[in-house]
Length: 293
Ligand SMILES: [Zn+2]
Image (cartoon, rainbow, N blue to C red; front, side):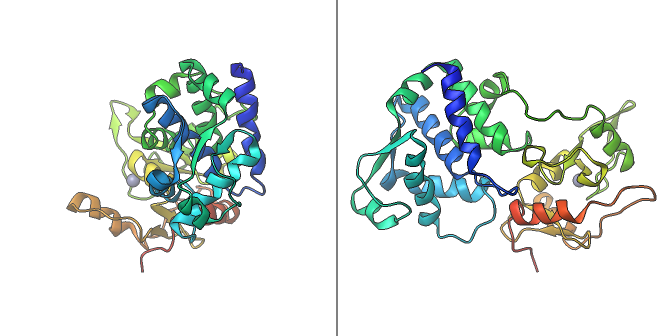
């Protein structure tokens, strides 16, 4: 199986998404198995030993969900078989937890795919393709680390051909529109004449059809960009900042995040207000609700 075959096979996982819904469960399982392959020489994933780590991965990097942890893990563990890249050592029904537990089922990537992924450049290309398709650049390194892959190696691999072109001017326009200040905390660091520690953040992710429009962008400091893309911070449709009740911290510095809760976004004259449709997408697909009360 060539690199092109692997890329084509994994690209088919994208076909499960519709209407902007995030469903990274299967890609996360493939990444998890790839991490196992690189660490142990086998992509085998034991339900008994590994379901909790898989469930945590989906909870932390998937969309908000109320599914029970084992159920969350059982979905990709059983359903990835239908994509013909995953096999189980017992023939168990889809989505059911108890047969997985009773039989101590072990899953692994299909033989040809596993063999192809033993080549480091194919493994890197595959991992790059999977994270790029599901996550923004601010989140991809965290996902790779979480499955035991080295972000520097993977993100040095050539990205898959883009289906859409990013606007070369959007980021600079967003920073300017927000007066080069974090829309959440007001951070406005500069080094010499250059802005430092400030990003243009998409509200609806670019990889999920978020447009490079003024009403889909916020200037955010690097910390708040990361927290926003991970769903620790959100924005309600009245443009008030929300903090996820799942967010915790132990130190005074970490707890300053709580102070943002309920704060009104400071729009200045001429700044385009974020579009409700993009905020709704972020609330539905990213923010780890419920918010603090
Ligand atoms: Zn900030």
